[in-house]
Length: 350
Image 1 (cartoon, one colour):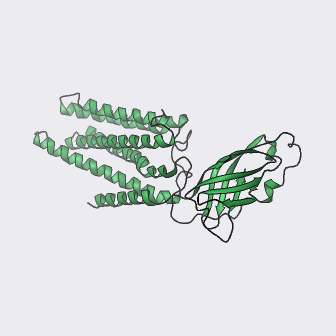
Image 2 (image 1 turned 135 degrees about the vertical axis):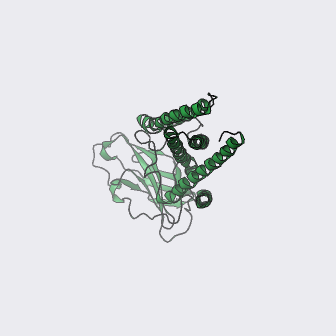
Image 3 (image 1 turned 45 degrees about the vertical axis):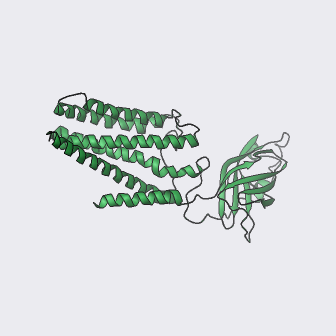
């Protein structure tokens, strides 16, 4: 069927694009990452997928900036190699807004390769005795302006994630597929309660089975990702806990199905349970995680992906990935339904 072919094409596209498209340039760290006002400091910028030593007619510009109003531009910039850049700054004698210290973002702008940014990369401390004089003009003399964009089709660089950002196309779609399959399962459970036909019960069970399969794959891929980014596979994060609870509720659905020898009674009770199981997904996966701090993107109030988490390049792969994995999930469920139908006919139950 056409939708099966579509699934294969979209998943091939997801795998190839997800692994082969490069990441944008970024800054991993700066050393040293702290100084005091009035000092002259040479800071090394360590890049990722950068080409600092690539020749260009216009020199590389480097800033440590506080916000759009206050920024410090390096006096001397010297590329060591493609991934290491040395920048010398004359630190001003005082800080904006009379603060005891400020957290500065690091920015390197290459005229051909584009700008790379590392938020909150450098801490500048106020030296005692210089807070009452007018603000040093170095903060406003050379503002951040006329940055060069990074060109080409590439995924965003995000510190901490690095190359693991590619797991977005495999881990996140698992939860979309889980919800779609559980929705299909409860739909057929409702149909069975209205018209108790074996085919409806068979479909409800198959969609729930495959939904659990994708839930387990989502947990497994998430634990691998968490090991790299959070330091361990299981951190008792609220979304991890609630997802585990939701899967246990659906495991209980199959325990209930196998607890009765009468197929009709088993199917009827399972259908009723399935309705309540699906209803529990809303508070478990969407309400409770918004009430607690979470390590997942968005954190408290919005533990999900937002505009800051997916750029247009990632969307070009992410949305086809969701569709492709969803079609694969329903394809697997369709095979499971056909197998169960043949088994029931062999046993004389249909």
